[in-house]
Length: 122
Image 1: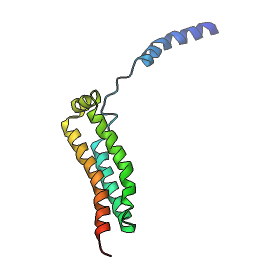
Image 2 (image 1 turned 90 degrees about the horizontal axis):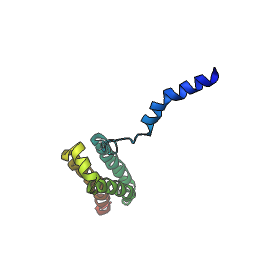
Image 3 (image 1 turned 120 degrees about the vertical axis):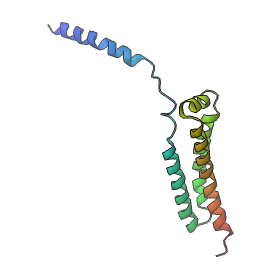
Image 4 (image 1 turned 90 degrees about the vertical axis):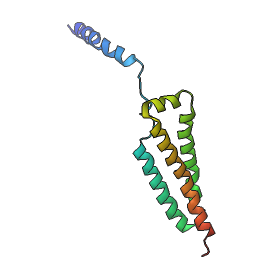
């Protein structure tokens, strides 16, 4: 009686095991940050850089390095010959332009605030 139950259970779970063995077809949109998240990064980096620039002129440069690495990885996805066209097809050209603008602002704002604080005569 017990052996029949185990066989029945394994025969019922066989289609589920086949389903789990299939490769997952995940879209590119799930791997890219949403536009709202990019703009929150811009606002957060700008606020953090401003607070750090009020303390010392060179502190926003500490924010710039991780930001530059993040933006470089984001742009590298767009420049990839496989991922780039998939991103443009799935998310559209507007997403790529918006991500480029947000990335540019993330890179420029810490440098701009450091420069303003450095050139100020206190």
